Image 1 (cartoon, rainbow, N blue to C red):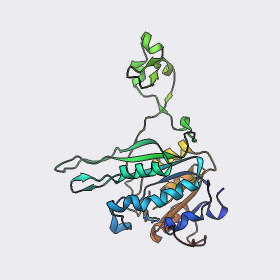
Image 2: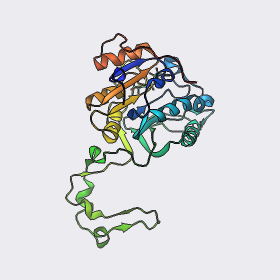
Image 3: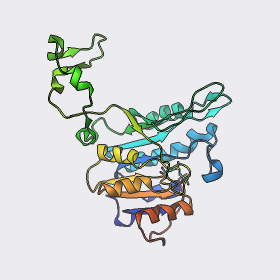
Image 4: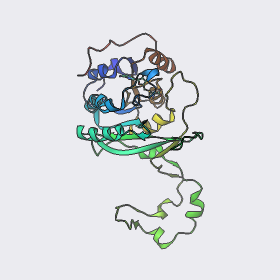
Amino acid sequence: MLPEFLKNQILLGDVKDWLPEFPDSSVDLIITSPPYADSRAAAYGGVCPEKYVEWFLPISAELKRIIKPTGSFVLNIKERIENGQRHTYVIELILEMKKQGWLWTEEYIWHKKNCFPGKWPNRFRDAWERCLHFTVSKKFEMNQDSVMVPMGNWRHSRLKALSATDQARDNSRLQSGFGKRVANWVGREKAYPTNVLNMPTECGNKGHSATFPVELPTWFIKLFTSEDEVVLDPFVGSGTTAIAAKNLSRQFVGIDLNEEYVRLAKNRLELPEELTVPVPKGPLV
Ligand SMILES: C[S@@+](CC[C@H](N)C(=O)[O-])C[C@H]1O[C@@H](n2cnc3c(N)ncnc32)[C@H](O)[C@@H]1O
């Protein structure tokens, strides 16, 4: 259980100093967007791509200790371009986290649907980011009905005249084990979403250069937690995850190194500005 003094707090300091204060199995969902390798270094420090995995692994080891067996860890990350190529630190990180015992359960794509065009000599504008979903067990909490979407107009034509195949379970001819019965969707108002999340980037000035839209953590919090459960963002920035958690009546904890961002997050959450929690003892080794 998360001790009361950590609940609904934005903690100032290095994540590596704070995580040892969290008891084992005390957090239901971790969702975060850590500093990407070297990017925005001027704004909040960067980690060089070659050192990124080495920097992150002690953190992911601690996150694994504090997450509940039914919990989820959603990591919003994207590899930067170096010398004209995508760097491979995200792929390397996934492999190393699997060695730590994490299950790489799914990958969601955040499609930034308001991205405007640009011109580069060798690629197009980057309009998506990874949201890697890690768990510690195959049986984790997942409330699929909480994120259902309207069926959409496709149903009017596709479900009007059903073939014999549509009315039976049609198994994949590629032996994938997947199958579908199209007739199941007749008369339904809602369907399950895909793993591509079409959400605009945050355009309003929140006083932080890398905020994600509140819809992003909101979607994952609904999907992977229930009321009163604990949501942690170890790189909380302007507090977006904490706001989403609060709006959904979950407990939140956020950590950030930068005093200005902590103040900003506390303002957005209407928390008192003064430090209410003792500063932790020391860093992870
Ligand atoms: C990509 S931003 C997060 C933005 C956030 N998702 C939001 O919506 O505002 C990453 C944050 O990590 C913080 N940070 C960087 N290194 C840190 C560390 N070692 N411990 C805690 N926070 C850190 C930065 O100050 C920055 O605010």
